[in-house]
Length: 154
Image (cartoon, rainbow, N blue to C red; front, side, top):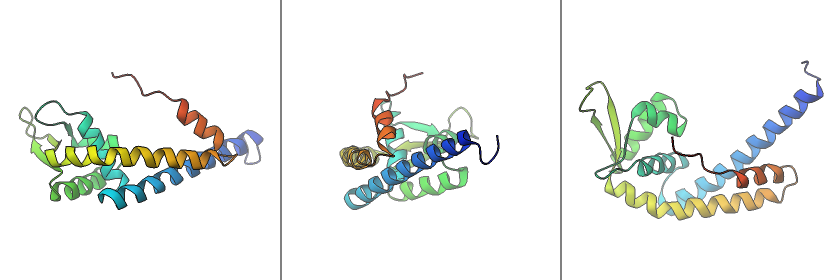
C-alpha cells in the first residue's frame, strides 16, 4: 500500500469518522456527568465497572484489571483510584492470598453515586448518538453502535 492508495485513504477516513464520533460522545457525556454528579467519564467508567463486579461486600478488581477496564496506564489509573479513594468512593486493600496484589473495591458511597449517575450517562449517550445520527458521515457508525450487543459473559 502507498500513501495514495484509495483503500488506505478510505481506511483513514473511516478511522477519522470513528474518532470524531467517539470524541463527540465522550465530550457530551463528560459535560453531563460533571454537571450532574461531579464525575469525569473515566471516574464514572471505573465506578461502573467495579459496581458490576459487586459480589456482596464489595466489587473488586486488581489494579492491572482496573487499568485495562478504563484503558489507562498504570500511573494514570493509580491517580484516578486515589482521587476516588480520597472522595470515599473506592478503597484499596492487599490481596489476602498474595500480598503483592492490590485490589480496588467500590464503597457503598461509590455504589450509590454510580447508581445516581447511570441515568445521566445513558441519557447523554442517547443524546450524543441522536445528534451524531444527523451527520451523514457519522450516521452509519451510529447505526453500527446501536446494533451492537453486549458481549456474553465469559
